Length: 365
Ligand SMILES: Cc1cc2nc3c(=O)[nH]c(=O)nc-3n(C[C@H](O)[C@H](O)[C@H](O)COP(=O)(O)OP(=O)(O)OC[C@H]3O[C@@H](n4cnc5c(N)ncnc54)[C@H](O)[C@@H]3O)c2cc1C
Image (cartoon, rainbow, N blue to C red; front, side, top):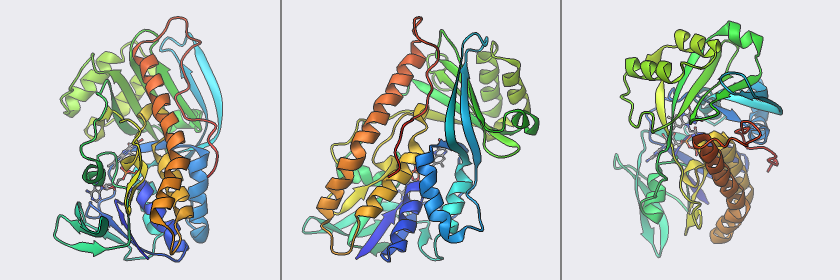
């Protein structure tokens, strides 16, 4: 049985590793041409880390990248209310290092770069071949799409996805601030306004680097012009009343490396497959970034699906089982993301303080 994976992000790379270890025939096709340095960093739940650890066991000489995050402190900008929660062992990982790590675990030649999905060819209702935009193609028995939130494969199966309106945007940057990290190397810190949709969070993603993000209600600025000067001016204007540590982060930051992230999601799909094409990761479901669920869900999807794939299996049954295991959980994350967003946009005066914006109580798969 030949399995063809489309999209070499976290979900696709993890799945390729897991399937190869089961002795299955796999190829992986990634749109980018080998430049994997894009993206900043994300937080990962211990349930995702345990899958990375399982993958890394065979090459333990190269440690999993990232910085341990053990607690989260959420406060108001005037430090009036504060909530501190122990997290256990989360990680903050740079996206590029994680993708490089998962690539490194794969045998050479599995990933074909510069292969952007164009369409499938079908026989008797089953996909038999995927064709890429450069005209190359690959035959397969099972196709798995992990081509991210804007998945072209999802669109080819289910038509245009209706994304929720963007009500919150994030400006994200990475900055070197070793002294600040030394003072709290394992803490995710976030300041959330008590009367408007505005927050600034930061998390160490290495011994001297941290990733920071400003979340803001788009009614403050719907379409910020993405020049470094404009983004810096917007951050400084909105964050005037935030503590000194925030000004320190802005002062140290190089705004030519920040980017704007649109916070959007879509309704849980009624299924994650059509015939012998299965969607996983962000291609299948997206929860708002407030949840920090994306990479953990990508890894849990890969691990769950890999556990169901066997030579000679009934693909429809495996795909339905995959949906029945994963959809209830990711559906909860979609709802959780929306509830945090609503509280963020309309902070309630009688609330018990800021919400801890992270998925919790996840089980290992
Ligand atoms: C460039 C980039 C930067 C990101 N930065 C952050 C961040 O800073 N913070 C954060 O929390 N999350 C970030 N994310 C999202 C986060 O990585 C995902 O939520 C999570 O990893 C889900 O993994 P995934 O494998 O499902 O999707 P992704 O990690 O998005 O991977 C999808 C992969 O599919 C490839 N692809 C897309 N279209 C095609 C196509 N037509 N044909 C073939 N391949 C295709 C993409 O190049 C990518 O490698 C980023 C994603 C990307 C792609």
